[in-house]
Image 1 (tube, rainbow, N blue to C red):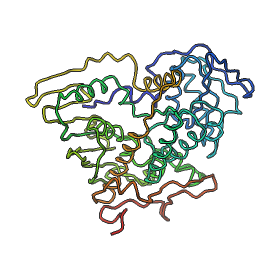
Image 2: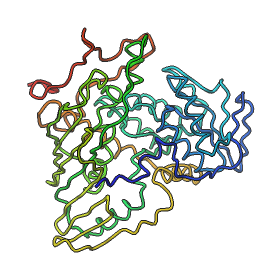
Image 3: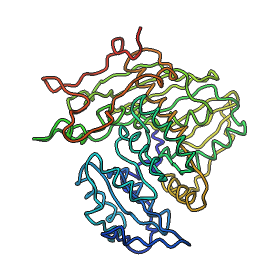
Length: 441
């Protein structure tokens, strides 16, 4: 059974199931001098950094979350991503020209994020996650409220930077929402409440899944530089994506962490490349199985797979001393299988929309949301899981966080070499359990 909520695909599909909630046309002025912000009801200026499907969907949700916002900039390394984003958003709203963005504020290049963040009050960060620590840090330095997609980093150095920036955001009273949308799902929140009340007792273990047939592949095109090719085909390179255990399975790992109320101490597991092993599949695995062990003694069995023709399942099941919670089904049962609780599906808004609603409401009401700490720990958990499957070793997550483990350069431009390079045959080095190591012996 595939229990993946339909809303989980909505950002990539420009939130097709939602309805138009914005009024009028959001016209972008050609000069910042045109901004006139009434003190009684200030306009919130929004910038999007990363204009793929995920960023475009987040922008749609933001447009529907508040009645007085202006999109002031869009930034991406590629102009065609900005073009397709604008086209897709307007098509989403029934072909209405909801957004008109002057070329002056369509910003491209590796430094485009800075120019976009500079002119905004709220920034939506949705580039490949390798860039998230740098972009988030800059937004916090500029005192901007932030929505950022998960995961938050792809290496230990990046996670530490996220923790530092998150603490600074708290000190500056900046709202930060992270796209781990299950924490904003009415179903998950209701089940969490029941578990907190003790309905299943203390959680002792569980199983979490992100098993699917996989995602897109962008083949190398003639005359592309190695760096552009990797940026276009970003899912298959760890410095950009982190592997699918980090990029997607983090959702399920985060649910386990949330419900248990702890973060794992250790990770150990296995994985490899069974069918997704071509040159265009870069350096990542197509399957991972990890055991996460928690301070309380709970053990979570984690599996994620990208192989067609296999069982598909995206779900979480957690066992306690008194019963079991089936998150995808919305069911809690006792130890004899008797149903103790069944969630009644009465959600009137997707968790993606709720994320943005709560972010903008917090800004308006001068409340404070900061999702950074738990999202950073869940990012670290997923990275630790990858390290375990790549090496075949037991990974202590506290030690992993302290490593000088860096995949992403601090500064990049189009003249920079790609952080990983293929051999003379066009193949990339693949991690090998038993040989790949992260700690000195």
